[in-house]
Length: 356
Image (tube, rainbow, N blue to C red):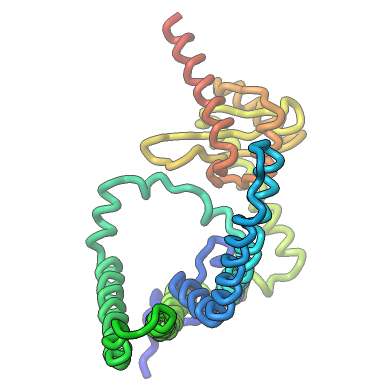
């Protein structure tokens, strides 16, 4: 059998590759699977819950009529309202508890616990209408639209066959008692929803399986990448230490070069220094291009002063940026406002200096 080309991704992803992908938020997940599981679980418990809810509502009506307050004081009205609504609210609690437990359980079963700051970083490029139009007419959107159409046809077929099977009972409802009417209609609706939910759950499980296959395919590696990773893991401790020190030195040199092109340096003002750059034409958010503490922070301020990069003391913001961001990271959402104010201040100051 001929060897595959060197650049072709034919190897399964290593544990390290998968771990890095999870940190970036690249995981297989089906929202349909979670929704379908929640609906199936609710349909299983709904009959008993509805019985309790009906009794609670009847008791609430009786209590509301018999214990209506004789005055309109706030304490009397609130006590009366709680007495009337207490039963129905407690009857609904099992529904909310089942939905919460099953929803969280299905999400955890699919992806485990994944907290990815990079995946949660807002991407303003997604707000571009042109990008939205491209996604709308992309092959992925076409496949999703076809899947939605097939699911709709399947669900409609299941609903029709269930109604057809109970057609005689439905036709005879006009001669029955109201209680019988509600019982028959409720039974038919429950059958329809249960069949639709179970079929949806099966389709969602298949969708999750194919998504896992797609993610595995996306994470595949070339033979050269696998060899390089193994080589890095098998290096002697002394050599790994030397390489790490060398990389830190190169990274520090590049970081100081990045300081020269930064828009502002946010300082503690002595312990921390964080360099921020923002180009609205190329970046969806401000980016941390350098950071350091103590001696490195001092060096960043010295390079910034030589390159005439504005230095703005803001101890709380500097500490938060240093703690939450690595070099190359975009500013997290909760710090957008504070960073925007600093950049606006710098731009106004530069404009006044140019006018003067």
